[in-house]
Length: 422
Image (cartoon, rainbow, N blue to C red; front, side, top):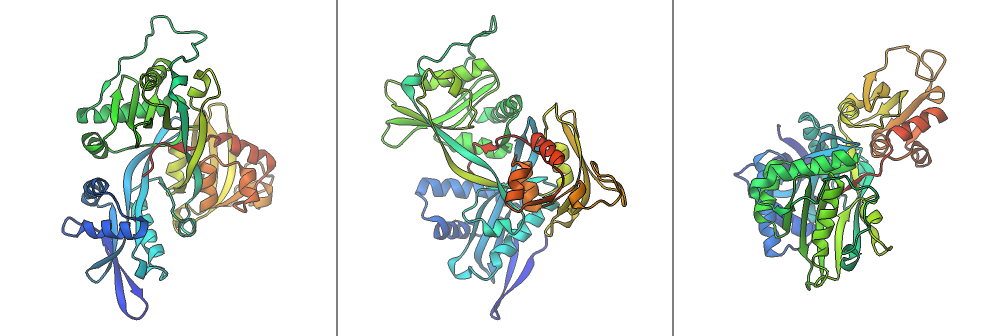
């Protein structure tokens, strides 16, 4: 990708380009600490090691004022699950600008170039956790899902509600300690768990990133044929924190919770990243668990046609709707489209000139007679499961019809969540 020269006032020129192995990654670490606070030494070492992989893959852009780095942003190569199907997703992280370089529009130019690079690499989707939202909204990202955490007394896990109808011959799987050699297996188990649950929003990382995590992370990790758990002691050793808990079967689910329950004599609680509809709520005998939403993440539809084709949809939903998409940053998404969803799959095709919009009565019908108009933000929020009625109230959708609204809301329904907090 060629560098992008940017004027900054009347004083100097800025350049945005990918970092290379010859550049000083520690300068980006310093910018991050100036923006978000100092890292403990162990965290700092891990940040440098992980982001060296991102630099080697050409996924770390930096802003240069001459030879001095004054900003940067990166994206991770991820897979994101939507209603049982996975798509490539660029997870944006490490976005920062030096304090003295803020307020000049350079941050927006950096994110514009990053979005361009993500699009050129063919990612249908991008997601991020925002420290502030205006800059991302101006480029088409919008809130789409949450990251949730539950606090459960470990004593409540010792005696789970038995199943109404256990499958004969099915016992709890054997869980073993996971090693670096299990990286591909961990990715596979997480994917199968999200696929089986038809989850919306959770992600898995690339093999190199998972290998690095298994080699250097401090959590205790356990892997079964269809279950994975990673947890650690919290500060003070009074409770546990489980950042990853996923299973693709009832037996795997019980095995993971039972392993955590084994700590009930020494750990008072377990805090676990989870989905709001985790089956644990149906396994506990009492209402002992407390669920909180820690943060919300933003989604960007980078390639509308590929994003629709790759997403899963409810099997019983069938629709044909005319959409007008307005995307100033990525013009290839803009225009009139026919969205067709049937049999759990969708497709987005360019509407023929002069053709009749589905649900309308005349060629070229306007947005008030069948055509729903969405900007990039509205498209992202709809993709993430936001009902069309909510989009209308927020000013993110116009036109269409009540029948089309109901069909679209049913097709994209789903409570989007993530376990990862990149």
